[in-house]
Image 1 (cartoon, rainbow, N blue to C red):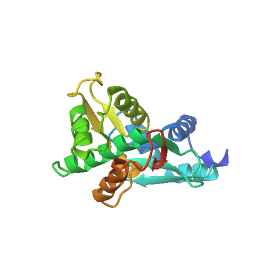
Image 2: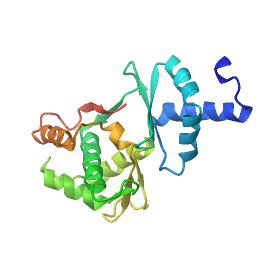
Image 3: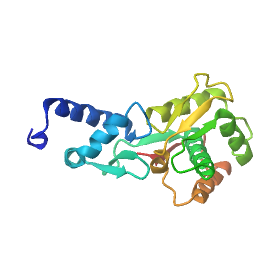
Length: 204
């Protein structure tokens, strides 16, 4: 394959592995210890990755300020359709990230707990009923797969369980200011969508 000429065989193997990883999870985060080396590998060979993935119809977005690499399909294929509650939880995580980040230095990690998520959900009065634990647990598992968060404790039923929110959430939920996230939650609160309706606007 001419595109990979000049690379060592081990580098070619890494290239193939990371391409498949990106196609599976969309994001690579510098602050995630499990794929930090993958992040820097893509930076080293960014032109080769951009050319190869471009052939497949993808754009490689690299934000070195955030330390995040995102794979975006330019034909709007392979979008993740979120259910209403998944969208609500994702927006809440984005709001919590923004609020916590203001209290921290630029290099500090943003960590919230499940109680923070429940409290924010209740304060927004999106629905009369509580956010059930199964819905929250399933949503967090989904967002962990896409490198948006990482639970730091195992018990996802305990309100003290800590959740690390990666900077990738800034690219997954691209709002010019946090007011837009609140505005969207207000639409949900007014009940303009059913609980089973999908929302395609958050994650590519």
